[in-house]
Length: 540
Image (tube, rainbow, N blue to C red; front, side):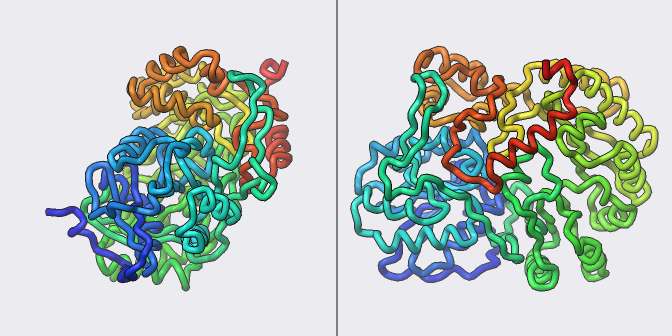
């Protein structure tokens, strides 16, 4: 059976006009992964509801009927290593990988999504157009602007699109370096009529996203997702999901959330509430009461990560009744000092209380998220995390405890973008694994090597294009990247400079010309506030 036939649409596609723009909209992974992405669903539905567009979907394992002469080819890009699949899909469509090799008959290749909005520069040579920020208004503005120059030459199209706020055309910006393997000297538009800076677009409405399709073939089977909040008010200093997406916005309960939930629950009984800080919605208690009605007794409810001090016994009871067995809480560390460095406003007492409330409310497990290698961290801070987990286990003995732990990775547009990955994190993950294992606590570390690759792409510039093509040949292991760096020695900076080096705050960064939510001066102020809590030994 065709997987598309099992989809239940929650929107009505338009019938394309005779002269509709043929668009291929791709997700560089399998269908089951792509169709679970709320961002992909929203963009696809937005395009499909326009009569001046004829859109076909493309995944690595599945496709709809594709136009032989597409004018636009779009990618939704949310996981860094999927770039290999982007290359594969371009080649399968006989489209050159590099934008400067494409001719007038090739489609304009555009992209959007979290990876691009954070830092598109490592992929700049492969894309004609990149959409920065929220798509609610930006996507329609892009299509409308394209309609105006649809029959023009490629160069004319790109110059016209570059005038639209939030649309970044990498080929219209020139990057100069101190040397081939040195730092960036300047980033400037190639001509005066091109904007010097491109600003990420921010949607400020109170109607947020909800699923446009429900299918049993999604990674989360038959789930209807609704975005409760966007961004996070906590502003942990390492956190891209907060800083890049500011300001914190909440969906209107009456006009957005409840109508969306009612619509979704007509076709499925599985509901996912999404957002970086769902329980901080000002009317979250009212939403819980609404979902506690007897008519929703059969609904399975899933929640994204919740803030520790919002885990009440009532919340736990509601979730337990709705077939949720566990909750996820990001605590980052058991060290009070380290939490001050990252601006995590949280005490160990609150963490223990949350666990006790979860147990009293009938939940079976808690997964904590932690981090190793945080700037300013010492081994005592890792020991404090072990002690905290031990205290939680003692206070809530019936709960199954898990600590998922990542390595700190610097992210663009955050106060910690200037810090490198701490190589000591690898040993500290091993230390946690050993200590927590003896306590009977499930420890799930993310790969340190994957964090190195993530940091490379997170802080990379457009000189990485050759490297990304080489690693595709070699495979996606850290060894492949090291091999590629060796081959390109003298042509690009070394791996250590991208990944492990602490950069000076006056350095020109690869995304200097791409404006996020906050100016650099504010990020530096937040960085300096964090460093007030650093141990003196690390500042010497």
